Length: 493
Image (cartoon, rainbow, N blue to C red; front, top):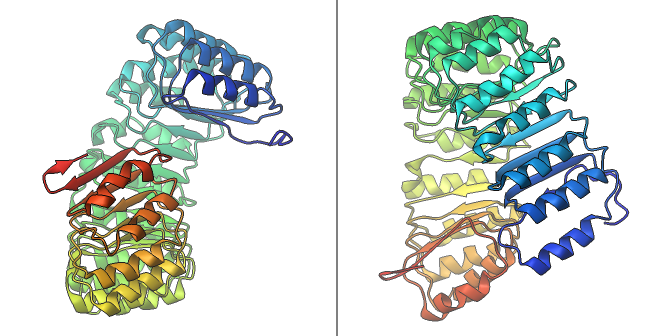
């Protein structure tokens, strides 16, 4: 790695690192020269860490991309050391996401933004205080920069009406923004109306307004966005409090463009609109992801949508969960899977409860070669079902998530599934709620956990063999978990 002069991103993590470990890291990374990007993630930055980061930046003034996320800088002096070193860079990308900084240090962030008029991407996602966002916008406005901004990410920030109006007056990015993420910003339709002039000026390819209260007035703006941005590729309106009438009009306007690659309408009421949406899908032959979970679709509406999907060939992700499925759902999905060779994930509905449908699902999934997520719950497995799932796992060794909650299997059937899983080394999430780990399969389950060193989320709630339960701490000693839950009778660890 010493000779790698083109490292695009370096992650600096200090979770609970021992002092000796820090010095080893410092000694190693000081050798790097010519870095283009720096990512500092998921750590508490103390003064000695800040000095190391500063030294690394001074040795790599070619850095153009900085991403600092999920970090805490409790000491003002440490924060200023990092900010002063960043001021020496000519940044094109700056993400300060979910970053907790000293309260009186916002001005340092503003100076950093204002000092980089060439910025193309700015993210302050997860900014909990709207005045921080307002201050950043004021700094940009006062310095007439950046003029080439194309990416703006405020996801999870508390954005007030005042901030929306400031952005509108600023007309960010003379070249026009292409990527806007305002997900989960607690904004209303009336506030979105303050962005009307901005939306007219931008050349949007990606817009995310999910988890907001868009309502009727906001729907009008969205329709105008679709009309004015014929090259729109990504539209996310999930859980946006839109009424069926507004959704019907928005879906109608989607016929004006044929470039969409991503559509997410999760948790919106699409009952009565599905036929119109099915016609729209036929126009978007490049569609890669379709998210229609919990949309109150009736079986005949799902059937119509699937018939349209059969005409597509670029789908990679389909989520039709939490809707009422028709009897031939799995046969239809099998045809879709056959035609869409790049299909990576199908989120299957709760109707997997029924044995016959589980068998149909098994036949579908055998057609898919790039599955990354498998969630099958409340199913009673037969020997055939277990072999189907095992074959699916063997065909998809890059599997990242497996959830078998409340599935009923004999030890023989568990053995089949877990033997196949021993060939997988990429799991991030592994859930076996209410599945007994007996002496017959304990070694197989232990091997699966041990083989997947990137595993972050592990849940094993049910009867556990005592030997297996005692061995868990040793098995997971090299893992970094965000959540680990273990139950044995009334004991939880």
